[in-house]
Image (cartoon, rainbow, N blue to C red; front, side, top):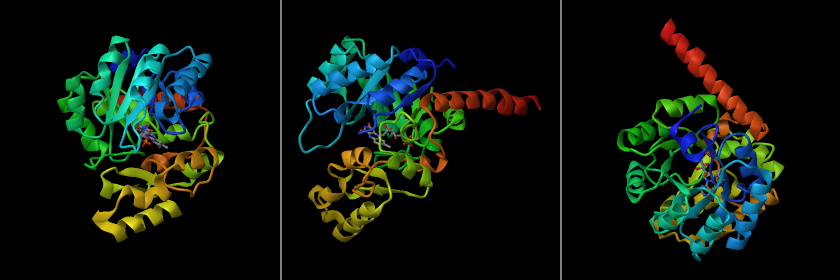
Length: 325
Ligand SMILES: Cc1cc2nc3c(=O)[nH]c(=O)nc-3n(C[C@H](O)[C@H](O)[C@H](O)COP(=O)(O)O)c2cc1C
């Protein structure tokens, strides 16, 4: 399948694996890229720019296909060394960066001068237009369904994607709620040039996370996520567990006077405990509603092959058949 996204990133299939904290290590990124998609290493999971440089090297040892790095600009107690991470990306010869969170304008000149294509992930048409104006190469439009940070507008993809298609000139992929060939064909029909998946890629053989995380996603339905940190305007969609219930109770009790410090126990330092140690109830961790569509743990290659075969079947037989009827 050839789309503007496969052409832009030099990949075989229009499928991207979004950056995921403590999930997007070289093993997963390389597996996605080897299967014909665009794998993404999560930059900030690497504690220093030097660690990211090593992770890029490890990924390159595992694949000769293009892969990318995610750089997330979110509120942090201590600002990460973004210039250092960007230098590691450029020096490592990486040609794709997924930015997310705040406006990446400051860093675009250095990245693009080094031939890096920037795909900015955002959750509203207004932010997408801004990213287009500042010169991003592509966008990843994250609907309200998504795991992670869906923003504050709560617009699901059935509205958000065609709205984006009506307004944007640069290509975009659909993100949030994507799981299979049906998702891909729907994304294309709504105006996207491909799709980005997060949660679906965690439940794969190669995702380097604790087995309990994969089993939790399999056990979850579309009813099992919750939105936390809304009062702080830093909304995150997470899998419900006792820590999340505790957090939501604090949000209810403290109302608009809540501060980040009040919920530190439930949100700070959670990812290594969940993803590495399998301590599933130790805090809030991102998960999409799409968990309700995930019922197995295939290899990344099997997953991507299945998605592409299913998409082709839908386009050629199901949809084509309807036209010929
Ligand atoms: C466990 C987890 C961690 C994530 N961490 C990040 C992150 O660090 N940076 C980022 O830009 N997006 C992050 N995301 C969002 C994903 O890249 C992607 O946009 C989202 O998962 C898409 O929605 P889906 O889960 O429905 O596929 C994370 C998602 C999950 C599930």
